[in-house]
Image 1 (cartoon, rainbow, N blue to C red):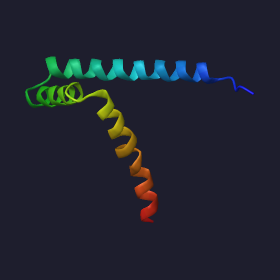
Image 2 (cartoon, helix red, strand yellow):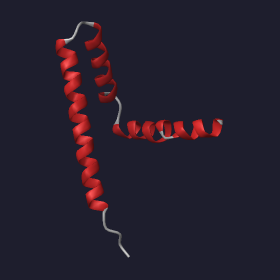
Image 3 (cartoon, rainbow, N blue to C red):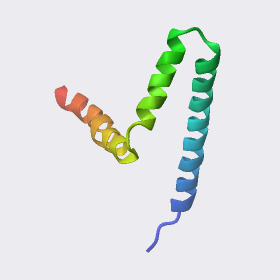
Image 4 (tube, rainbow, N blue to C red):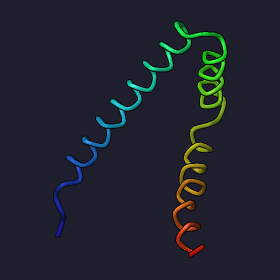
Length: 77
């Protein structure tokens, strides 16, 4: 039997990702153009770090790196 709900979940996650990306991009744009000197440099470094790495590497970092943090915390106690 096929479970329904896959398309609405996918669409809601896509829209949520779009909204978060738009908000983060807008904030970084404002920081880069309108704030004092050290902050635009940090915003540019953040953007260039994500632009300079392949998407597959970013997926691996999120999956293996960030995904292992909760597991490491729970095994500690």
